Image (cartoon, rainbow, N blue to C red; front, side, top):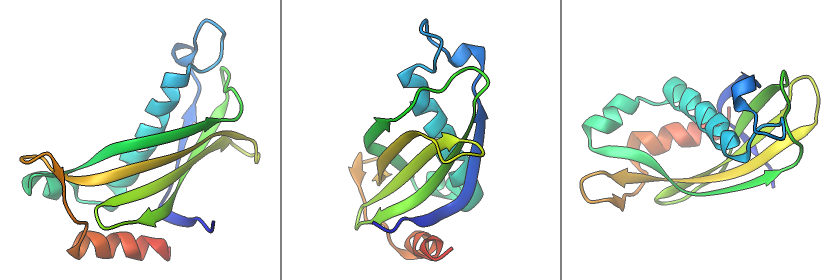
Length: 141
């Protein structure tokens, strides 16, 4: 599949001691935090999240699939790149690729499916209008 740049931004994270588990590598749950930090940096850069909140809308994760490829160790510098995999009627799937900085060594590959939710009803709503236009324009960046 051809992955297109999404919200052009690379997040850089340095592995610190508090990220490690008793095996002295990054604990599997910490990768979720790293991926979330990257998504938030992208959202803050690309979307008016306060405007969504005022409308009672929020992006909510409904599925994450992670392939762990290589353990990250103390001092590793990780880059996380987000690519748009799919825009659906009510959901978006983003691929997040984490690799060791300066190499092509993959640490984690993840596919994250997000819906736009009406926080009052708790139901997914269509992605349309200005938001859809912004997402579609990011496909060509």
